[in-house]
Image (cartoon, rainbow, N blue to C red; front, top):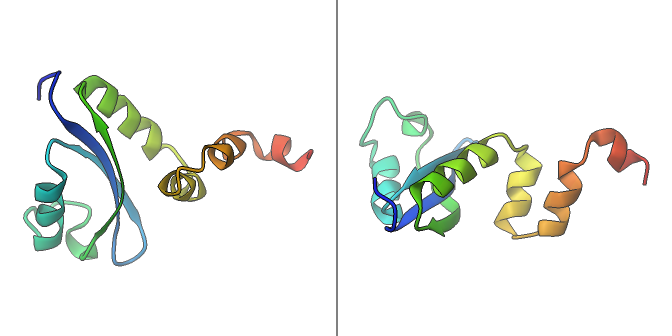
Length: 103
């Protein structure tokens, strides 16, 4: 993958409710691959069908990969706030549990 093109970080929800986060240069093709079982070794293979919950466009693959890695470290609640683009809640969830309980 090269810089200056179209890349997407995406999150799909699997049939068992789990989330899968990935990077692609073609969201429609990637969803097709997930839902048809294109790769039997893929996390989503036994969790089909999947539904797209989020995607974000990037022109720099390095930025896309960095965002994917960051999201993969997030809690389920934080990912669900991302689906709603609720940056206030994301910021609140980024605080430690102790910080949140002080309020």
